[in-house]
Amino acid sequence: MSGASDKARFYLEQSIPELQEFERKKIFTKDEVSSIAKNRSDFEHKLNGRGSVPSDYARYVAYEMNLETLRRKRTKRMGQKNAGHTGQKRISFILDRATRKFHGDVALWMQYLDYSRQQKAYKKVAQILTSVLRLHPTKPELWIHAAKYVMEDQGDMTGARSYMQRGLRFCKQSKELWLEYARLELIYIAKIARRREILGLNSPLYEHTSQSALNDQETDHEADHIALPRITAEDINPSLSTDDTADQIVSQNLSKSPVLTGAIPIAIFDAAMDNFRDVSFGERFYNVAIEFTSIGCVGEISKHIANALMSLDNASPASISCFIRQPLAGVQTSSPEFPAILGVVLKQLRIQIETHPSLELVDRSMDWLLSCISAGDIDPDIRTVIVATLSRIMGQYRTLILTKGGGSGDRVADLLQGFQARGLEKLFLSTLAWSSKVWPLHPGLLTLKASAASQGDGSQ
Image (cartoon, rainbow, N blue to C red; front, top):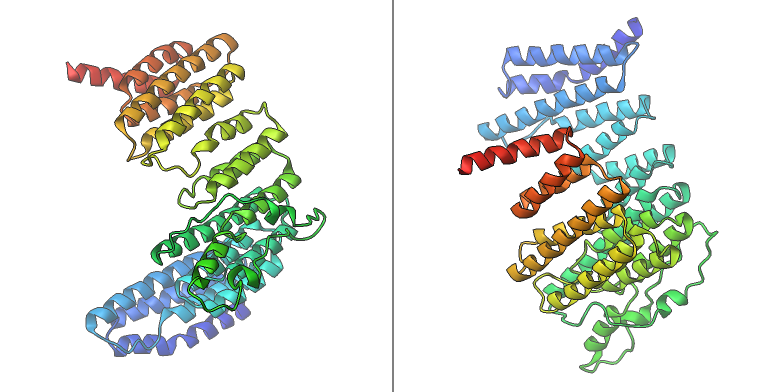
């Protein structure tokens, strides 16, 4: 135990100049400095004694962070520009000791990374990433964190791709890693689209071209990496001509490059589906892609995914749902072509539900229709059409439950809350009436029924 006390005393002695400065500059009173010293002594003895756990380090770090926040506020109020001792070095030192002692605790490593990023200590972040990925190469969340850091803080898309590719070598069976890789590429395309818009490059981000960018790639499914389409020098520098059309040629070539045509996300999807062959996972890919409505290539990406899922299993509710919704991918609800496309989609929806009646397909369809209603800029007449379709599908949902069984009170309660939140009072009351008979003792439905009754009494 004497060894632990000696270590604690050694670390405490290192903080003496800091405490003396606090008192000399009147940032903290003498009593407050004594309290700080006592608290640090308690923490140090606990950390250096037997039986210390990761939470002890976490509490120590939280204490030092709160202390540093208070020090900064008082320093600012007193108008002291010379910072002197700061808590950043001390907090980093505690986290470094924590990760060295409990190198298997990923939460401590993540806390260390987040704090260093917050302090903009980029060299330290790079060192931490190197260490933690060497120790935990099979943790997909670490590779995702590393790629996002390089992309967001450093603006290095090549480095972010490198982290994702290396992560997939160790975590090939991680579905989240595949999805985040695709999301990263879509974010990159969206950023380029935004920059082109700011610069006034009005040429479309995507033009209908052949799939040669994908077909020319010799895919080796046994390789350790995904063969992504490449951008060559010719894509951005077609000639050395100095005439007035050179900039237009460069702009056109950039708009047709694999980065902007969605070839890279498609290649990631194809590689992932070769690995998993799972339509539910493919549906998750589809939902990630259609989040990026501002990029021109989302229609082609979603079409490729929907066709691939239908080829894999054309009777799966997940495949059918993606196939039905695909024409609307990338189409804004405020655009002139939205009503016509929506009409085609709703017709296809009715056909598919009649052809493949299943609770799963109806469930997915209702979620999608509710999300359409939630759009803030949707036309009132279009909203009326969607509500009518939703009511018809809800009737089919009721028929399936009463004739074939299945379904759950929890799911219906969630739908009822969605109807209520969107002001669909008539659909809410009709659904509540029949579902209360099917699940008379369900707590969620009983609560909604009581709430509806009280509102009805109040309105009278």
